[in-house]
Length: 370
Image 1 (tube, helix red, strand yellow):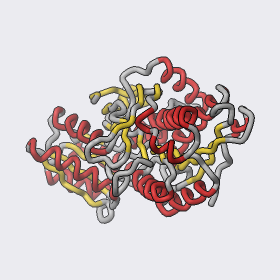
Image 2 (cartoon, one colour; image 1 turned 180 degrees about the vertical axis):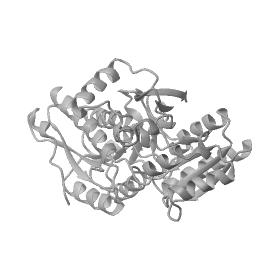
Image 3 (cartoon, helix red, strand yellow; image 1 turned 180 degrees about the horizontal axis):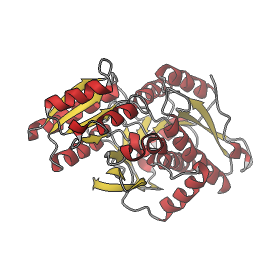
Image 4 (cartoon, helix red, strand yellow; image 1 turned 135 degrees about the vertical axis):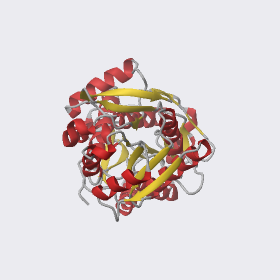
């Protein structure tokens, strides 16, 4: 397995290190840019923890494993990290991968704080060993569905690929729109080309097309085809999963990538901690940090707070999720039991529907907050 080195700051505080395993997509077919932002947040927080004296005098060390969006690879990494004696697991962006990691961590009795994956059913059965920072998919996507309805879009088409995550998103949208007179038509990207999708949209009368597909392929060519089809000049393109959040989207699409609403998990304004961390993340990334980078930072902040207060025993850590409120970059983080969610959940991180401003594609416009 191609494995990045452990955190270079691990030796700043003296003594034997306290290890945290980090699962991050760093190679294709994983969403590499999301992984890079997630890792930047994790590493910045570890650096700051060690500058402040570590975990009761012991340095915090991050052992990073590349999941490459592969559930089997992630499960194997959990086994390896558990054997290396990590106190807890952190990270992961892809929901299907995080679900595999959560199942294996739960089976091994290893606490896992999931940073970014949103799939409601992160575990098949309720567990105390797994907690999550990101809002559940049903929470965020219902807010997105309300945005569509308020904007007059009740005939929605979704371009989709086979995935538990995309299927769950389609179901959430359909269940939320149907009682309000809305319809959701699925367009299967296994069999349709971008030109085929344009023909389907021209025929079925949908006023919005949602991209429930990977980026850059096939999302980027699909956007280009729709944008340049005169029959579809009035159609809204949306991407609830957040594909336009990252700079590579703007680089690939330019003006065509603007005015595509998506979900991001940020407050209207950052407080002093969030602003300071945002500046430091920008320096590390050499670009504006995404919400995923803030999720990474907050993950380590939570784990460090628990480890300082309750020690490094895995059983005590798993029992401590609801006991340690932590001031995160996007608000105070508390974990609780949420109906329909089998893991300890921060209910909820702030949710926004935003898009890139057509006048300045490097700037985001907030369209709705929830």
